[in-house]
Length: 184
Image (cartoon, rainbow, N blue to C red):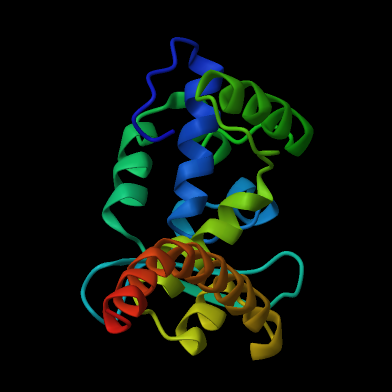
């Protein structure tokens, strides 16, 4: 999806915001209200998003990864966004989800693409799968309890299990070869 060129401005914007959330873990309600006040220089000298989650009022502190920063820069000079003192042109949740379905079709993604999937992708594919400790992921997502974040880790365990089952099937042929050579 990242590399797919969309020739419609509205679809391009929805794709950008979805990808932004894949790299920040922000929920729809939080990216919709994201303003320049939420971007600060963090402990590492880089840009961070510091925002209280709409759902839980828990603080999320998220270092801004290069992909997310590039998207912010893309919209930095947009007069409509500046007038509203926001950072991204976020449509209604209903429209975002409807346009995501359109984007999924254009990208030949056979999955029910919803905006919440971006947050899920941040938790699993972007962070946990790349070795970020679950405690750090939990803090960035603004979860009040580590148990909430552990849900994403279970999904990763399911994926590991499925991948290993497929590998076992492939390797069965090799073990049959060794068993046959033993009896000769």
